[in-house]
Each structure stands twice: as structure tokens, then as C-alpha cells.
Image (cartoon, rainbow, N blue to C red; front, top):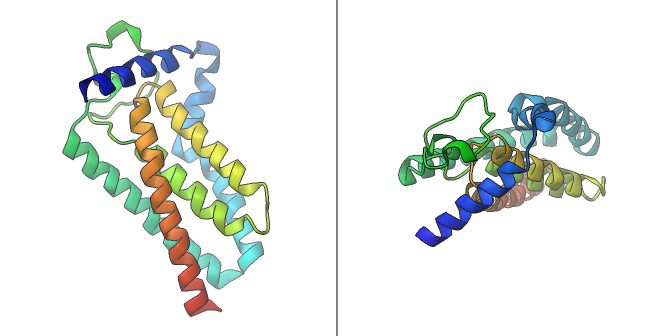
Amino acid sequence: MEELLDYDKDLFLYLNSLGSEQWDILWLTITNKWMSIPIYILLLVLLFKKFGWKPTLLTLVLVAAMITCTDQLANLFKHGFERARPCQAHALGDYARVIAVRCGRFGFFSAHSASSMALALFIGFLLKSRYKFILPFMLFWALLVGYSRIYVGVHYPLDVLVGFSIGGLIGFGFYKLHVFLHKTYIK
């Protein structure tokens, strides 16, 4: 396990060192959860165009439950494993570029990565039959959010990968729940 964590730190230092001041504002913008609001509004419009009001309301309720699920599960893991974030790891010292505005204590696993992947798969699967570009777009967006967490110095790559995996499972599970509820109660 220690060897895996050492590889994770080395990969973090490599990926994090790819950053430069001229790109910092872009990655700080991508990692800011409020900056995704235009994407959320666009997705809401696309959902409404495909489904109408009732299924869109169902979708919003499920999205709220899904994001709550990923966030709370991430908090359980963070406080259960208590793995210090790279921005808190004094051993990394001068080697890491930490440009994040704030840095929490624990980082395993990344809630940003889990939530973005869950949303990407959930919405991507719901809309892919009507908008063929949506699933690849949403996956690309989730990958950008995940990498931004490494770039700004608040998560190791393993935090992000585990977040993607757990978020992907949760997103797919909520998609299946949506399909079931839609068939059972809406149609």
C-alpha cells in the first residue's frame, strides 16, 4: 500500500508540475463548482425539451439525491481514511504547486470528481438517444473537473480516480432508478 501511495504522490507531482501561471485562472475557474451553472442550465433546457415538466422534476429530485449521496459518501471516506490532501502534506513542500483558494484537511476521495462523474453518466445516459454528443461532452467535462483538482493542488490522482469510479457507479445506479421510476409512475 505504501508503494502505491508513493506512486500516487509521484504522479501528482508530475501532473501538478505541468501547470503554469498563464493557465492557473482557467483551472481555478474549472474547479469552481459555481462556474458550471451555465452547463447546468443548458442541461435543464435539454431535459425539458426531451421529457417535459414531470420527468424533468423527477430528474431534478434524483440529481439532488445523487449529489447528496456522492458528497456524503466522500465525507465518510475522508474522515474514515484521514488521508491528508497534497496541499496539507508538508513532505511535498516546495515541490507542489498549490494555487487553490482553500484546502481542507482530508482528501480521499474527491467529492468534485465523484459528483461530476455521477452527473456526467446520469445525464449523459438520459439524453444520449436525443443528443448524441452529450455523453462524450459530459465525460470530457467530468475529466476536466477531476484534473483541475490535481492541478490546483488539493487532490492526488488516486483520490480523483476513486472519485470517478464511485461517482460512475452512483450515476449509473441513479440512471437505472430514473428509468424505473419514469416507466412506473410517469408513463
